[in-house]
Amino acid sequence: MGNALPSIPAKRYFTIGEVAELCGVKPHVLRYWEQEFTQLRPMKRRGNRRYYQHHEVLMIRRIRDLLYDQGFTINGARNRLQELAHAARNDAAAVELVDEPELPSMLVDAARDLSIDARGGVALDSNAVRKELFEIRALLSPS
Image (cartoon, rainbow, N blue to C red; front, side):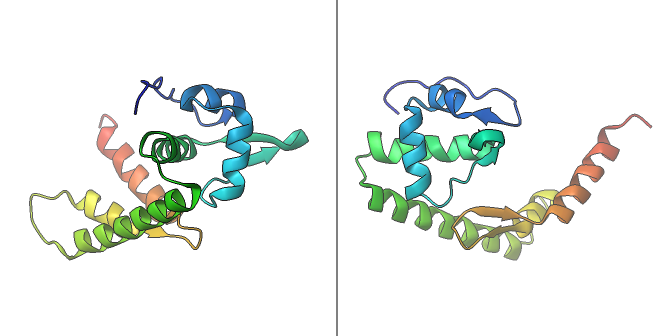
């Protein structure tokens, strides 16, 4: 990207103003992109206030890069994101087929749990993710 963007803080939710600063775009542009890119679905709370999650901030940065730095049109960027989602789905399937001992089993399990939803976004099996988090916690806890 042309200008260096600030690092994304370790927070669960971001307001539209924070996302605008983190991604180098104006809030009205973010609202417009929500209409054009189905992958952007911020949570709305009281008074229709938008709250973005970390993965949505990353998606906005990717969209910004495609539109501003790589020169894609809105339709071209939308198609490129769908291609990337399709490639990610194929990569997850390829990792599932690989049976090499040097690949950590948790990585293979995580790739297997990834799926692409109808809107082209990445969806996770929440039960599998929860199970993995408990396994990681057990590994990290002093016994």
